[in-house]
Length: 160
Image 1: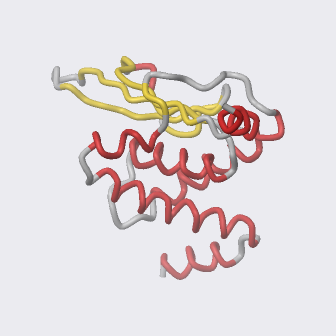
Image 2 (image 1 turned 90 degrees about the vertical axis):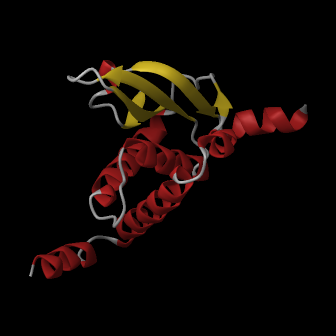
């Protein structure tokens, strides 16, 4: 019965929201696949290592960033695979790239209550955190990847 209620809820959404949720689901699947590949092979596709994008953003992107963040968080609960922090961050980065929005993916480590090393990933675009912000303050940043997608940056790179 629960699945029927969820299907009805999905079908009742507007077309744009449905497409965004489906896109999030597909990118979460792609990111989960990439997580199964050695990280050294995936890292170059994440952007420029140890760089950050600007903390300023285009105010018109705020609504897009919020909707992408919501879509990723919602759909990560419905995947048949593990869709935790790194998978969410990589999916979000790809969705922002499609929309020519800059983002920075952070990787951090910390020790849990038992003294074991744990890792976390989160994604930022401008001053907004798309994924992983809930616990990021507990982690020390060990790596970051800047993906500059804004049209101005792309045109600047092409003119070189």
